[in-house]
Length: 393
Figure (cartoon, rainbow, N blue to C red):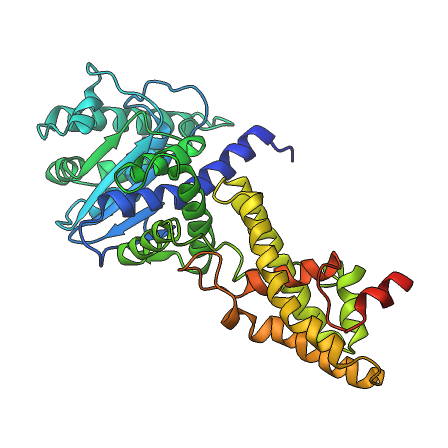
């Protein structure tokens, strides 16, 4: 069976669009912090609150077309929503990139005009026409039956009585000319306009979307309170006395790829063992990636980070230089032991003696990993004679 690659790609983009649209619905439309959003539940997106709001998303990155009463997607949605005709709790939203002209009968579902009896008549007529054409094709033993995509919606609509059809349509709102997945980040940036300065909006928007992607994988149900707490946390990280943390909960995909070079040799000089190599590799990976991200996002510059490195070197030297003098002429076993203590100090206690890079920065991996990078560059070391030994090597 052949596969239309463009159709498959469109389907995947539509699937990805659902949780991203859910983020904006929860943020903009939830009327209480306890409201929760669900994805792929009774509908593509469901917002639970005073009302249960169902969102059917018809995503497209192509050119917008005019949405008419004959639209297959609309009728497929009617099949899904027909059971809620008698509900007093449900509201439904048909979200589409297609447009609806003010002369279009469906425009009342956009504008909020509740006089919808004429739409009921038009949809009833369309549903009967579809079913009649289908039955004629069946009677004629047609090889291919028409209206395969909309027949079930038409049947579901006609199974409702006249009052139920009107009640159903009174619950429906069409959101035409909707944004698509390509525009999601700009939508989030716009939402941040009242919270942060323009320079920071794209950076915070990107981090919020990254968090949302990971969070939605763990649970398809999220409360507005959780979203607001994450937003507050992200905004707080960009205050003058703080920095965003992107890597404290991440680890490299391969420890082996992070080992080797002077960092590992330095740990071997003091018989540090694999566990210390592993923690050093993880810390250096986190610190290196975080520093690069700060620079890329123009949050910190290389000069400030280099100055911080110099502070680390100076504090290390205050310990290493006296140790080297005190151990001159001592057996290598003693030198290794003292060097191991210095290595452990950089991981376990250095943050107690060195100011954080910003006063509200609470993560130790920057100091831990930066020391390991400096050891790779032979700017610091653990064994009293590390420079002489590694240069000989």
